[in-house]
Length: 318
Image 1 (cartoon, rainbow, N blue to C red):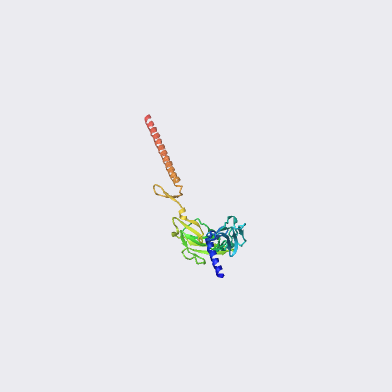
Image 2: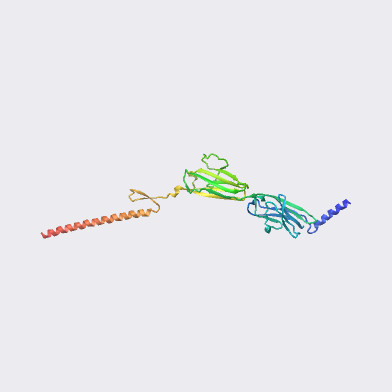
């Protein structure tokens, strides 16, 4: 008798497999972001193949607690359950996807999608993913920002990256060359630039990072009369941002023109726009002296002419 029922059950299952709408069920995977960004939104999508069967239910769980359910055969197809850290945007959710907004620190956890099909198969498949919450920082910002420098000057700069989760990687560059970093307060007696890192952690886990770079400017640091200093902050493969300043050579800001007279007896240092006025003064002085000399000569000749005329008149009377 038991043998007969076993044969009947096996036969029924085989027949059901060939009847339209009574196929098996396969889980294709779960599509989720690599990380949940604090304050933003995220969509979780469940991909499956009913293989000809009918969907009975699709459920989402966080850390084992159900928070979203879709049952197409029910009058109220969508149902939401309260779970800590899970905020659902129902208007943007569908039969196989759920949208979380906004993301909080409590949103982090293990998310699982579970799919079941209807009679006569009643298969259930599921897939889980671990999701971490990250925080995009403010910065990096370099301070202070000196305008110009000279060889021998000491440059002391700070780079701040605040409110980050996890802790970022902060790298200084001088003319595109990375500067070694240390979390220890090492001696700065070395001639090579060195950056020092300091951290402080908030109660919610976010990290403020401060990096200091100090170096003495050398002649070799200048490229085309300037030194480019950059601070870059990197978080995994989802965040990279930089701040940079340009330090110019003080010596390139001094521009003078040397003008000499024709006799090269003396020189004068002038401003860039004084050249023409200086030459005009020379021309005016030369013209004035020449005019004075010509007038003096004319008066002498006229006086001599009057004296000679007087003598000749006296000689004629005698």
